[in-house]
Every structure is written in structure tokens, then in C-alpha cells.
Length: 491
Image (cartoon, rainbow, N blue to C red; front, side, top):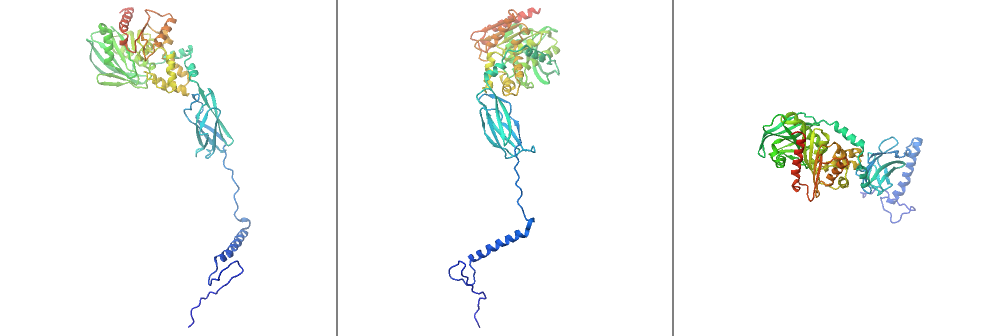
């Protein structure tokens, strides 16, 4: 039997660039590459030739969408102190030729003054891009040019100087502005509406038995609370009303107010009906209870509306109260309210005020405004409302100059001095809360129109502060002035 033989032949290839011994039964890898590569090339050419004109072709190149327009979405026309950053970012949207948002566009921000951060921004899926702009040091209108491809847009910013701007805000009031304020006052409704007795009980006021009521009513659509105290035993329309307007912005305590009045009036304590208003967004406190008047707060301005409405409710519901004339006293914020009440209600026979603000356009008020627009906190009653509602919004352009000016004018009793009833003013020259310049403004205003004693009395107390107790002769003078008022009215 023959041994088993491999049927494969031994192949020896020479002349093809190989070397080395022949390997029976195998074709070298180099040989296969040299044979396969030309074959693959020939097959590829054959496929392409067989396809002819119907074979695959490359698509024509398409131009990417281009920026056709830039819309300024927000941030245009802002005001800021020269050299400072605008409050809001500048936001733009890039649109293509089909007016569709264009993502991925490169937006460049070029300010003519100041700097932007960032300077170049790629738009997002919504075509939006934004930057923060710090204005240059030059006051006036500054511009920011925005570009994307050949599209451009301009943004303006107003660089302002504190002092130049305050010159405009605190310029002397014009006659048409005073007329506008008077016209606004004439539209106010402080009639008694929806009066409700919330609490009624006996109260001993310095040995004088009285009836104390906490009442509420609607004023300008808001629920307002106040207290009315009536001495026992009085006849119909026998007692004049005294309104006491409180200071500060933390509300009013009925007991504390009645204690002050009892000490001040002494033996006259039983001769009056007492009206104690709270103001908007502030509590009226009595004993261990508290009633919060609706807001928003409006120091000095709407305070007057609330107080006048409470007087009207008193006259309509308290038989013992006189209805033709009444007297108002107030301290600090309440002193300003008392003077403005005297201007707005002809029934007021006289006003007594202790260190109340009279002039929101004088240098002291301007200095406070300068601090507020620079971001400095000033902790004085009523100032936060003016800051948040008028001064800072005016500074940033959200409130008009005219609205900001009218807000100051309608709180300035000196501008309406000719409308004031008999007035007595008390102020200390060391007052660290309400500057003595406020009393001095009223003295000048009254002097200019020829008002003096007994219709106008003003006392400046050397060394006295923002406390009635620091001016010992003030209370006796106030009582004498009050007696004179009552005598003038035949009481």
C-alpha cells in the first residue's frame, strides 16, 4: 500500500520579487497582495463603466444660511451712572433671510464708549445672543453697534451724572405742576364707606371715663383701621375733634398715643373727641390685639386720604363730635401728614406739628436722593417707599421724570403754604432724623407770603433732638396755641 500523498502540487514562482525557500502547499502573502490589488482596481473601473451616465453624482454645494437682520430684544435705552454697568443685559436675536432665528451665527458687540463682556457671542438655537455693557465715563447718549455677517443694529445707553440728573429732578416746581397736584387731590374719594365697629369698650383716659372704639372702613378700595375715643357725658356736637397723626412707619399704639395726649392736655383731656388713624400697610395696636390696614403703603400722600376718611366716619357716626371744624396734630412723619391735611381740608381750624417734613425739594431731601440712587441705604421713615417707588425707578428709566417730580411736590407742604390754616411748628436744631432745614423751609415760605403770629408760629430749639421731651417748652406753647384756636372758633 502506497503512503498517503498530498494532492496539491508544489509550485515554485520566481521572477516576481520573492526570495527565500519555496514553501510547499502555500502561496505567499506578498504574492496575494500583488495579484488582488490590480484585480480590485479593474473590478472598480468595470462597475463605474457599467453605470454609465446614470451613476451616482456629488450634490451641488449649498450656501449656509446668512444673517439678514438683527432685532434688539431688550436692553435698549437704559440709564446708568457714567462708567457703571447697565442694570439689564443687551439681548439681540439674529434672523436669516426667511426671518427665522439663526443659530450658530457669530455676533460682535462694538461700543463707541465703555466695554462689553463678552465682545463676541455665538447665537443659541433661538438665534439669541447677549452681552453686558459698562458705559463709558462721558455723560450723554452712548451707542453700541451689533453686527452679524453684514447685518447690523444699534443700541443706545444713557450715561448720566448724579448731580446733573438731580438738578432736573429737584428744579423748582412749576405752576402747572402745582395745578396738576391740586387736580389730582380733587379726584380723591375719602368719604365714609363700609364703617364697622371692630371693638368697643370703656377706657380711662387720665381719670376721664371714655368710650374707645376700634373701627374699620373702605378707603380707596382698601380696608383701613383707626381708633375713636369719646369722653362720656358730652352732648350732641359739643366736642371738637383732635386728630393725632403718628410718626415712624411701624404702625400706631392706641394706648401710647392716648398717654401722650393726656399728658399734653392735662385738664383739657375730657374736652375732645380723639381720632387716631393707622396708615396703609401698617398695624393699629390696642391692648394685646392688632389690626393691619391694607396696603400698599404711601407715606404722606395716601396717609392723608386715610386720615380724612376716618374723620368723615367720626363725624357721621359720633353724635358728640363737631362737624364743621377740627384740629390736627402730628409728629415726625405725622407732622408732615398733619400739614398736608390742613392744605387739603378746609374744615381744619389749625395744625400743630413737631419736627415734621415740609419740603421734599430742599437740599436735605436732595442729599438723601443722591445716596439712594447710588445704592446707599437711608433708614428714615417713609424713605424706603420713595426709593423703591419713585427715585430708583426714575433713575433707571422705569418711572418718568414728571411722575417722580410730582411725587415729591405733592408731599411738600411748603409749596402750598398759602392753603395752610393756622400752623404752629416745633423743631430741634440737633434733630438727626428730620433736618431742621425742613422747619426753616416752612419759615421762609410763610415769610414770603406774609404769614406770621398768631396764624403762624415756629420755634427752633437749640440742642433739641427728634424727641418732644428734648424741647420742654413745646407742649405749653402747643396748648396755648390750641386754646387760641378754640377761642377763635367761639368755644
